[in-house]
Amino acid sequence: MIHATASPTLDELIDGVRAGRRAMLARAITLVESRKPDHRARAEDLLQALLPFTGNAWRVGISGVPGVGKSTAIDTLGASLIGKGHRVAVLAVDPSSSRTGGSILGDKTRMARLSLDERAFVRPSPAAGTLGGVAARTRETLLLCEAAGYDVVLVETVGVGQSETAVADMTDTFLVLMLPGAGDELQGLKKGILELADIVAVNKADGDGLTRARAAAAEYRAALQVLGAREPHWSTPVLACSGLTGEGLEALWEQVRLHKERAQQAGAFAARRRSQQIGWMWALLDERIRERIRTDAALRDEMPAISAEVAAGRLAPGLGAARIAARLGLEPT
Image (cartoon, rainbow, N blue to C red; front, side, top):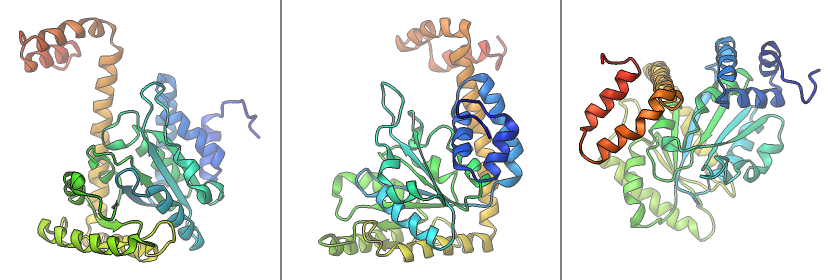
């Protein structure tokens, strides 16, 4: 047994994650989220060791504007999936505090049933300014959850209007929740996010909102017909559901299952996963270059002067970038 204050060895982390122990999985995620160089090296060894045990979960991204009821819907849907024999992990990416970098909303507190169920794992993570509201280490966390035996991984994004391409590019099915009668001010966001959606669901189809939700669903179906199908094997369905009552969630998950089946039959599933792996590698390379810029003392001292020259119009942005690249050894001086 590992003492609560002891730092587990790499082998202990591997064994603990493979055994599906939630406390050990949480410690493994904390390790991969760390920015300390020695932690990053251990995290890479951990991920490499667990890689053969990943890839077996269905990865579902869930997005929508704040207030659409994502957490409530996920809590109800996750509980239903557990009842069907699934093990469910939820990666809830919170907005970050600009002061502390920590999570603001605390999504774990808003998923009461899943948080208490031993067959579920809920991990709130601060987005930390990452484009699209996806935490910088969400991909690694997803792999760890798969290695721990979770066969459904739900990635909840902030959904505040940034590009949601990041989550669409790391999941197998991208589900967008919409509000009934949200108003014209959100039409721009809706169009952009609809183009990424594999499934659209108008939430809060209960009580007085039922009629409005059904009307909104009809409008979105019409809009999607104009946009056309994203993939030759799949036309984006639009449903009405209630995360509060659970009404329509069974039909929603059936569409997720059908999307998976069609993608596998068309060979699109494997192609999408391969593309995601390559994209992930380039994203990590970009991150390492940015980290090198941030930590290189000589370059850090020179950056303010280069930035000032560009801002003042005395140096073209392209030449400024070339100077920085040259300092990194990426271009000849």
